[in-house]
Image (tube, rainbow, N blue to C red; front, side, top):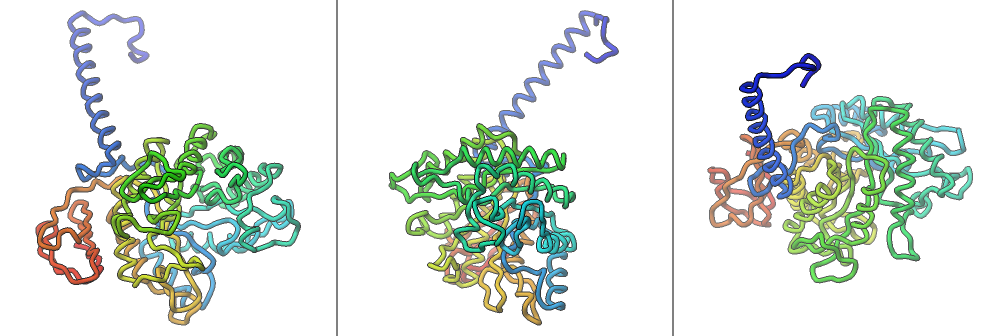
Length: 458
């Protein structure tokens, strides 16, 4: 009872009525919790609703990551065009603090260089995007190097020495104080440098110690900061494989047990977290196999998201997701753009169905005109900065299916119904033709003719 009820006794009749009323409320709440939990555990797919309700501060939605080349440099007219393009439909934008377009932020202890990071943050602010920073990678002096920055991949992907964990945490704190409007921070990238070759597993103990120091420093510098990890790669094995296979399985295969162990250890020993973040692909770790095919393999994103929700109870972010296997040079250029967009759309459907809180498309921006999968034409070109098909998909999807969107079942029929993937919310329907040919199907009561790999908003 409240303060005003202290020292008083209710009449017996009123006490009985109040007890009955409270009992009824408890029953109703129990039923609601049962429905919500059952809905969450099933991923919401059976009834066409999201796996969890929205409204969490970590629900940033659909965005992208800036890489080596972005819209902060290039031709003036093209940069202005790109800024207009991104401002039309603002989305979360992620940037690493070192590498991927940003210079060494602390080349010597206590000597800072934030020119590149300032420029990228300025672009995010100017275009209205929610800024996100990935706290990777580390200055050379923190990992056994000297004053000179070694930009080789081997050096860049090296973790700080344990003796410098606190130094990196302090750098993270300086960055958080420099950009007080940045509230979302991802700690490190893909466990880079944290693999223990002697034990053939991730050094999740070392990473978690590192994470906790960074987490504490960020929270001290900015009480509104939202921090997540562990950003480990959700590698998977083909069905039937016994090498490092886990109980997290699907028609796509099984999650690598080493990744499962890393997430579970971090979850049990972390100082705190506002979201859990991972990355991964729909194809297998060995052989880059898409099982059963490139479209059906995307179910992995839903299954892993559901497992992460159950394991951690935290909102789930995908810092990167990939659907097209890379070649020897890590380029994904083997598919036509319609094919690529169709598979990406299907992957995003699976993520949305499982209730993902954030998902960042890794923008493979280049300096030339030929740029498969890019979001906008390179700003190094005089006529650059304009929207490309993947950005159109990303912005449409972000508006139609933000975190917490209540989805509804979609009726798909006709002779080619098996070739259609569909997702619906309210009056919005997204239909994807997964076939490399013209098809005819009835989607949500409308008869459609869909071209090869066509993505159609209804």
